Amino acid sequence: MAAKAIMIQGTMSNAGKSLLTGGLLRVLRQDGYRAAPFKSQNMALNSFITEEGLEMGRAQVMQAEAAGIRPSVRMNPILLKPANDTGSQVIVNGEVRGNMSAREYFRYKKELIPDLMRAYESLAGEYDVLVLEGAGSPAEINLKTDDIVNMGMARLAKAPVLLAGDIDRGGVFAQLVGTVELLDREERAMVKGTIINKFRGDRSILEPGIAMLEERIGIPTVGVIPYLQVDIDDEDSLTERFDRKEAGGLLDLAVLRLPRISNFTDFRPFEAMEGVSVRYVGAAGRLGSPDLIFLPGTKNTMEDLLWMRQNGLEAEVLKAAAGGTPVMGICGGFQMLGETLSDPHGVEAGGTLRGMGLLPMDTVFEKQKTRTQTKGKFRPLAGCFSELSGVSFYGYEIHMGISTLKEGGAPLTVLENSGQTEGAFAGNVCGTYVHGIFDNEEAARAILGLLCRRKGISGEAVHAFDLSAYKERQYDLLADAVRQNLDLEAVYRILEEGL
Image 1 (cartoon, rainbow, N blue to C red):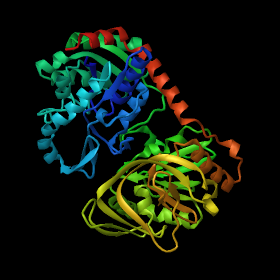
Image 2: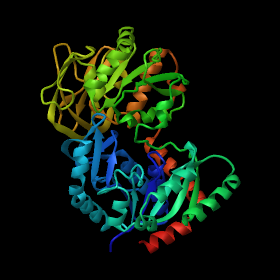
Image 3: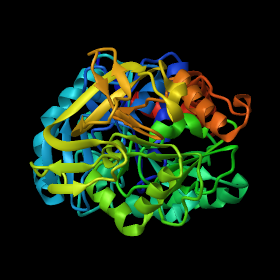
Image 4: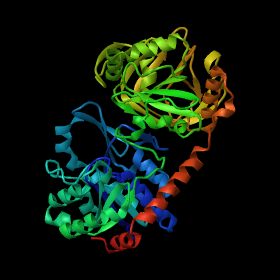
């Protein structure tokens, strides 16, 4: 029997669709349903590698965790990773199809309907309920032709729609009315309820507006969700994490806020730790004197390095490194730390670029992308990073560059699955291709320990923690908020009736 379906769409990007989807999935799990997420097309730089070595968006990974199931690339069959302002890398069922301009993809996307429907129908055969998520707004009238992610996908899946508006940005009634007004008659009939999301304040003051909204559009409001104080993975560049710019903990970790930053969830384990502050630095003069500088992943290493070079951040990092501050690069950030970056196939910007020169290595971008989950141990390390020696880790690799160590360089880790070494280490600078390397409590505790030693404070002043247990608590808090503020009786009735 095929799964029942319901879809959450939004009036705009960052209206809270991903969290609402995750919360509803958690509720369904608690109520005894086998439920799974589905987003036909996602645009994000923050991606994940499955056990099969396939690439998918992080939002559907979060939603799968909330549902208590293993992430599958079928939950996000199309992933677009912006490479520049006008084009993206197109990934279908976890595999790269190539780079396309926005115009090229707009013409091409309808050819992907069989791919996404195979993924959808496969999931529908395994689960009781699928909770679909839209993208952006369904009322972008210039993009509605051959839509495959909002109303077009709802029509294919025969999924009734809940439309969420973001009251925190203001104008939520105009958002909801305007969106419904721009839908055609068939599409309006698919919207079975509206949700006012991110509400702060006294709901009684909102009630007259809700009554007028329901009268105007003829669609019931099925929930007013408060602004949620839950710590759950964000996916896109609108994340509030990037607003953190001031040091406030015993340990100050600075992450460079690159224009094309990706997989910033690498630093999430530190963000919830007592005594640790993680701030995102995107301008020269804001770096200060952190205890550790992270260079994160990026979708375009060469262009982001040039950006750092032009705005003065590179010079500040080099000065800090020369003064002994520990510096660590992950994936694209690791590549920047080397001596040269070469792009003979035009994977990024093309040509050759001088690196930061902090690690003795060269990087060449290849046509083939490395995609794999991995685990291993840090090699014996001297000096600054000695506490990491022998520490186990797990994570995943996703990159198109191959980095080769030169004379004087030492690898950072050894991988269990292949026995090969990886990364690089020199003095107070190191780098790795492994994302999620600090999700392991042992690795997080070790990096905090070495920073405490350098600063002359007790390691007991900061605390590592069980990330998996912490995530579970956050998903339960999310579900509690959904239960208290969403009319679940109406939602179950909409789900049962379908389209």
